[in-house]
Each structure stands twice: as C-alpha cells, then as structure tokens.
Length: 180
Image: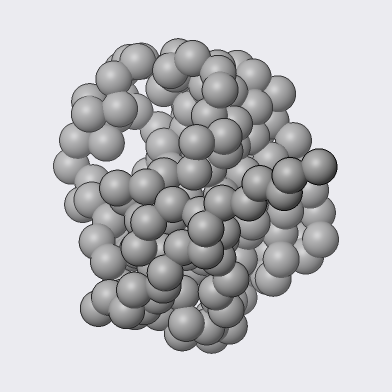
C-alpha cells in the first residue's frame, strides 16, 4: 500500500507569534502560537493562517475576562462545541443564563442561540470548535439576557456586518500563555 501524507507546513514567525505558512500538518506550542485580540471580544489563538483556513472545522482557544463576551448572541446552521479549560464562564443559551466552570462542556446543536461571557474573578479560557461543512446560515436574535453583557443586537439580523457594527475587529496580538 502506498503511503500518502501531506507535507509539513512551515511555521512562520509573525508579530503575534508562530502561524502555519501553508497547508499541511504542523505542531505548535500554545505559548508560541499567534493570537488575535479584540477590545470587544477577548483574545483567541486560532492556529490558522488566514490564507489557509482549516477546511473541515474552525478551532480556537478563546480567553475572556469577567464580563467580556466572545461574540454576539447568535444561532447558526453549523454545530459548535465548547470546553472550559480554565476559569469560569457564563453561557447565555436559549435566552437563559448557565454558569460554566473548568471542564464543563457545551454542545450547541445547529440553530441553538448562544453566547459565552467571561465570569468569575479571572480569565476564562475556552476551547471552541465549529463545523465548516454546514451552510452559511446565521441569525443574531435580540436577547435581553445577552444585552446585559453587551452581546445582543438591537434588531434581529442575519448580517454579521450589521451585528458587529461598532465592535472593533480582532487584530494580530502577542499574548502570554497561560493567561493571567
């Protein structure tokens, strides 16, 4: 049997840390990996080069400070999964609050409205994974509960551009790991 293996992707040093410089397999330590940060939605280690996104799923480790939302309250066509690695979080799901602590796992079936918010007294690190095979359907419903954390739209929309109007986009950032 012929062995087929993709090449190793080179790691490229950027201002934010190491990122893959092409397609293929790679290994990177989180303490050296490139991150992105937004003043509105915390920091994330995405492990991807924006020009070479993973084709099957998105994955990142998102770090939120207390009261900081990861996104706008939304529901999408793809399933998502979340595992709290460190700290405490608050999940707004179905317009109800649920406390999350280290090692709690949340599975969002397609079309489950949700947002994660940092909670507790320190940073909350969450492993986030989402499917990329599903369609691009997404809706940002109005949520009084999510609005308490600055995570709700004022009027329902299916446009990410409208939902995130006023939020500063994430930019490459060098962030320490583990978060303090």
